[in-house]
Image (tube, rainbow, N blue to C red; front, top):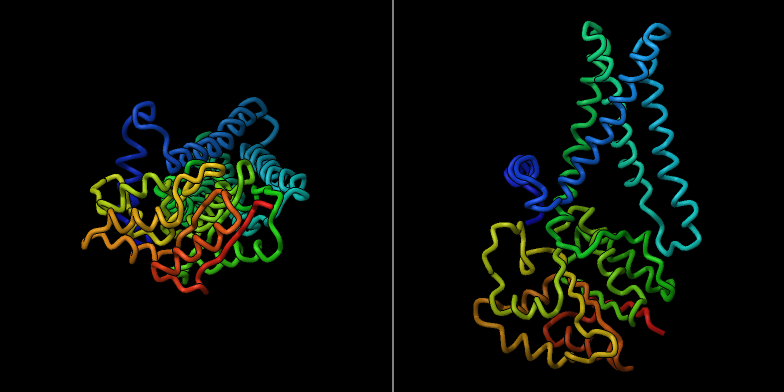
Length: 333
């Protein structure tokens, strides 16, 4: 599955997000995004209403709506630029400015819509304000579809946390390895069977980096799945487990993140053990080797011995992955 279809979109919006109590079902990323935009609308609407009623004899309602929308626009710009400016010296990867600016514009449009609707409430006979509100709604149609579906891609990847590459602050990453990561993300839409091995000790950011890479891919609307090695072993045995809550599974997603394969200082599963588990649990129907070979996989491994990088690369070659499709990022020195 590569794109969210309209049926899935409608089911997520009306069945899962707008109906039912979040205290019972939990808060999804799509629900959180809707609540966030409703908050932006409200912060444009109520201050404009209050100012218009308190100073109604001094200026028309549109005057206060413009002030409120402008104040929030300035706030959003500073909220975008200042945190990134102060964090610039610690950044390993540059932020995706076009993406962040688009998100900021979306927020500002919701603030403006709330401010304009307040004018319609106070003075419903003003057709010009009504048309401005309608134009804002039209402008928000594409951002709404884009961001809501993007949150679906992130949500059904089941990442353990939300993290972007520009937030990653690992200490050990040379220019060549940085280029490997950036190329892996850049080539995502056309990528097939590319494997990246991320090595690191405790607290060196290997899981953060792996999740950040996959999250950037999800933001590109690529189907991703996060799992741990222990969970994956059970999936090898029955990869087609029926779960109506999933839009894709580990075997039909485009990118797979496998975490905790060999936890640092605990050499619980060697590359040979991993291969034996595939052979033992694989059946004629599952074909786990073939699935892993042809899938883009992010392998997150601890560092337990000097020659481990070569051993895991050899494992991938054993299941049929060409050496040219295997990249290594080592965070441990």
